[in-house]
Each structure stands twice: as C-alpha cells, then as structure tokens.
Amino acid sequence: MDTSDAVPSTAPARTPVLSVRDLGVDFYVDGQWYPAATGVSYDVFPGEVLAIVGESGSGKTQSSMSLLGLLPQNGRAKGSAKLGDRELLGMSAQKLRQVRGKEIAVIFQEPMTALNPVYTVGFQIIETLRTHFDIGPKEARDRALELLRLVEIPDPDRRIDAYPHQLSGGQRQRAMIAQALACDPKLLIADEPTTALDVTVQAEILKLMRDLRTRIDSGIVLITHDMGVVADLADKIIVMKDGRVVEEGSSLSIFTEPTHPYTIKLLDAVPHLGRSADALAVETAQAETSGTTAVDRSTPQATDGPVRETVLEAKDMVIEYPGRRRQPAFRAVDGVSLSLKQGEVVGLVGESGSGKTTIGRAVVGLLPVTSGELRIVGQNMVGASANDLKPLRSKVGIVFQDPGSSLNPRLPIGESIGEPLFLHRGVKGAEMSRAVERLLDQVQLPRAMRNRYPHELSGGQRQRVGIARSLALEPQLLVADEPTSALDVSVQATVLELFQDLQREHGFACLFISHDLAVVEMLSDRIAVMHNGRLVEIGDTAQVVNHPKDSYTQRLLAAVPVPDPVAQQERRLTRDALLEAQRDELERAEIARADELTVASETADLDAHGITDQGAGGHTTGRGF
Image (cartoon, rainbow, N blue to C red):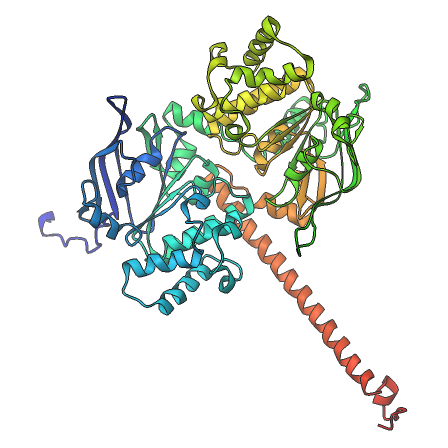
C-alpha cells in the first residue's frame, strides 16, 4: 500500500500560548553589561502549567518580567518571545499596555507592595476592567464582585470596599489573583504566589489555581523555589542555574529521574514531611532483620540520664494587646501551658494570627504577660520590670524572621555580632576581635566579611550573622522566629544543618517558631500546635506528625505539599476527603443546633400563651385557654 495516499490525521496541532526562543536578559552596571539570563527557550500551551525553578539569582523572575517590558531601566532583553503570532520583545510601550492585564497577567510575589495602598481592592479590579473594556461602572463592579466570589474571598460584598492593609495575606493574594483574572488572560505568570502564606492558605490558593486553569484554559508560568508547590501544580518543569536552563522535562520525570547534578542537589535539599515515619520504618526493618525490637518513638521515652533544667515554664499564660478607643483588648494568647528543658528543641507551629510569634516575643521580654505564669531561666516574667529583665538578656537570645531589618544597616556585621559582648560583658579590643572571628567561624562565614555591611550580604549570609549575634553570649534559651521562611531550599538546608550543629555544640534549648512543618519535624524533639491563641496539641514529633489527634492538626498536616507528584496527588485527595467530612460534620452540628433553637422557641411561645404539656392534652390553663 502506498503510504502517500493515507488519510492524514484530523487531530489539530496544539498551538502554544507562549513560545520563547533563545531569550537573554542583561543589566548595565558600572559601564558593563552583565547577563542575568542566557539562551532560555520553552513553550507554554493552553491549560498547562510550566514551573520555572531555581535559587535566587538564577534568572527565573527577570526572564519572565522581560516578556512584559517590566525590566528596570538598566535592563535589556534579546531573542524572541511570541504570544501566539505576535512578537513581545521590541513591542512598543503602547501596544504592551494593551497586552498587560488583558492577555498576559501577573501575580506578583508580594501583594502588599503590588497593590496600591490608597485604593480599595474593588477599585483596582474595576480599573483593570474599564481600562481594557468599554463597560460602565455598575457592570464593572458586578464583574469585580463575581471575580471576588470566584477566588472565594469571604464576604465579598464588604471586602470589595476594603483597602489592602485591611485584608489578611491570603485575602490580599486572592484579590490580586482576582485582578489578574479580570480580563480572562491567555497567559498567567505567577511569581512565588504562595511564598509567605500559611500552608492551609497555600493549599487553598493552589486549589484555586488548579480550578482556574481548567475553567479559563489559560497557560500558567509558575516561578517558585518551593518544590512541594511544583509537585502539586506543574505539568512541565525547567530548572535554571546562573541564568541558564540546565534541565527540563515533565514534572514526573524531573522528580523521579533528575539527570543534572544541580537538579539532584536542589531536590535533596528539600525538607520532606514524614521523614520521622520513614526513619521509623527503616529502623523497624533493620530490627526485624537483626531479630531485635524497634523502639516506638511515637511516645516520649524515659531516659536514665541526669535531670535537665527547665529553662521555660508557662502555666495558663494569657497575653493581651491593649484596646484602643472603642476597641476592646485583643487576647492573642489564651491559657497556654508549655515547658522546655535544657538542650531540647520544641517546634511551635500554627497559622498567622495563632499567637506563636507573640509567645516568642513574650519569652524574650519584648511583650508583657497579662496573667498566668511564665518563668524563663528562673526569672518570673509576670510584672517584671526593665531592671529585672536586664540580667535575662544574656541568657536568652532571639533570631528574627527578617535579618535584613533586624541588623543595623549602619554597622559592619563584625560590630553587630560583637555588640552584645560589649554591652553585657564589656569585651573590647583584641579580645572582641577574637570572639567575633570565632563566631564567624562557627556560622561558616569568612572572617573578611566582618567589615561588610548587611546590604552587601545575601539573605542566607545575613541569617547566619543573625544566628552568630544571638549566640554571642552563649544563651541557655534561643527563640528562632521563622529563621528560614524566605530562603531558597539549598540555602535553607545549609542554615538548618548549621543550626543543628550549633545546637549540639552549645546545648542551648530552642523554641523554634515556624509554619513549615517539614522544617519543624527535622529539627524538633517535640511539636506544639497553636490555633486562635490556644495550644490545641503538643507531643513528641513523630506522634504529632504521624498520628495527630486534634482535627486542626490533621488539617494543617494535610495541607503541606510534598515534593513528589504521585504522593502529593494522594495527599490532595486525602485532604479533600478530610475537609468534606469535617464540613459535613459541621453542617450536621449546625442543623442539630438549629433544631434545638426551634424547639426552644416553640416551647417559649407555648409558655408565653400559658400552654403546658397538660394544656396541650386538652386541659385549660389559668389564663382560660
């Protein structure tokens, strides 16, 4: 048979929404062009999610911003980037303004800085609609309300007139997504859309993005360093390092069979929730092979060692922020009881607003305790004066969430590290120099960096400086408040490994505050779970992670994405089933409560008319009915 006469396939060829070829981005600095991205090529098809992953400085964000002409003034882009059959690079500013928002939309990393603080979120969505479409104010407002309902913002009729600062982080991110989707764009660029969100809010945003890509059939470019998010959402992945694409492929192939050493290193650095269960399984298998009995670590084990000193003891602790004008006092921490022994690491987890950071600040004396008890290294914190707390400063250290804002920008880092030694112990001169060098060695920073300023260091280096400063006085208790939340996974892994080494070397107790449960599981001996100012669960790490008792802890753990596409799909189904069951249980409780109220109301009506149970049987009451 002559194959030239065969009937051609009728299946239409897929046309990419975006086609990028040999894209390069350069920046002009001090009279020279420096490359930020080189030779980047990829396609994005309708209904497809392409994840661009890599560390900070890999060029993933700048290569995507160049598509819309959003580079700084000293930047330039070359190569080709076609939206359908139109070339984006070199397009005039007027034509680009017509493309932005209408055909290509961006979800920026930080909604608080991307949204205009002087306009309501509703006004900003309406402005986008009226810029690109010929519609009236009422029709635009109705469409804005529809979009806010689409992204599941609670009480959209009221929130549409709220300013960005009046919304939570998750609500601001949803409002930005609503604005991005206002014109049903062909392409959506999501730049770290969930970096600063709690795991439960992150899970809701990811679910929303999955629903949206099928609902409007848009292509999505996802820029992130969170491999759990990539496993949850991406169809294809390209891995960037130093401005170049080092590996690309399907999500499953990249996670299961990575080939480039950098990709392998990146995946190995990702904290994996459930490692305590994996370790127990390995230990059990080894015990069965050797004929011994594995130790059950789901409950705390008794030890024959010396009794360790209790460095933190809280009993029914209450912390309130005072009311202002007509607003009542806000109770941020309500009746929390917690203890921490020398050399122990306790992870304090929960969503934003749960009270975990408030506890950390109270532990170091930055907030007063309203009632209950709190003793830190023998010092009663309730009603303590500034003079009472001064000796405590040398016994308790704190690592702040953002080292960039907690370090003095006018002081070299050597002076910042040595300042506690000078203030508390009067150390100076050659002795101070030796102490600073010893601390820099401990956090694995070159001694030559002592003369640099904070802005000259990377985020990971600044975080190490913060750790060195907090350990300068060799404290008995260290409070670490989200110390790795904004770091790349490889930098985060280095900082966490360093933290573990220092904890073993110095033997300090640590209250590790975080919403990253995988990190907490890796570091902590015990985990305490906060919800709405209350401690809902506390126990050994393996028990809390693998066998949570409280329903809130179960929801929190189910929302954590894991860097494995197959396992993540199973977790997502389990989470949806758990939420559905809890929703049904809540509805049944509400129905039962409504029935009780109905019966109570009917009884009250009968009593009001003087009708008793006897009266209902035909007997009259004293009112003559």
